[in-house]
Amino acid sequence: MTIRLFSVSVFPLQQVVASTAPNTLQVAAEVSTVVIAVISVMLLVVILLFLVQLRKLLRSFQQHVQPVTDRARVAAENVEYITALVRQDVQNVRAAVSGLSDRLGEASERMEERVEEFNALMDVVQDEAESVLLDTAALVRGVRAGAKTIGGSTAGATPGGDPQEAPLERGDNSEAEEEVEDTVGEAIAGEAPEKA
Image 1 (tube, helix red, strand yellow):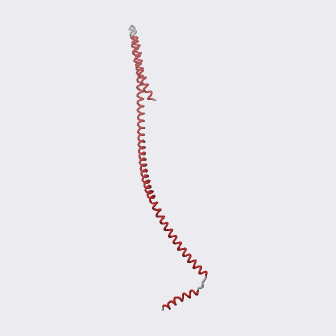
Image 2 (cartoon, rainbow, N blue to C red):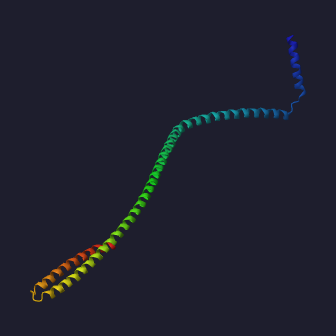
Image 3 (tube, rainbow, N blue to C red):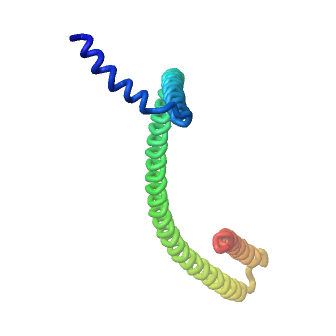
């Protein structure tokens, strides 16, 4: 039975081989298919080896780059912190300068008001000083005129009197007049710089 089975299975194979004549074109096609398959397998093996090597290279590159990226991240965090501090300090300085500017403006306005008040006070003082000086000058003129009148009437009232008394009185009056004139002159000289 085995012989029979064997003959049945070999017989169709013999028919196929016998029916197909060895054609060179067919053989070349089969050989080229086998060559392409072998080349594809070899290329696939080379690509797999290349991918394994590339993966190893990327892992080593990642190990070398990891500390650099960690340091860069830390540096970036430090820069961010520093910029936040600088921004806060700049805002504080800006607020302080703004407050100082406002206070300087208020102080300037107060100073202007005080200077205006002082100028008004100086105008009043100057007017009062001028009126006092004018009153003093009028008083000096009145005293001078009175002294001349008294000196003239005294000289006429004592015709037989001592001639030295009249010049003494006159000298006393002239000394008094000179003192008053000196006082008025000093007061005027003292007011002259204030007017300028």
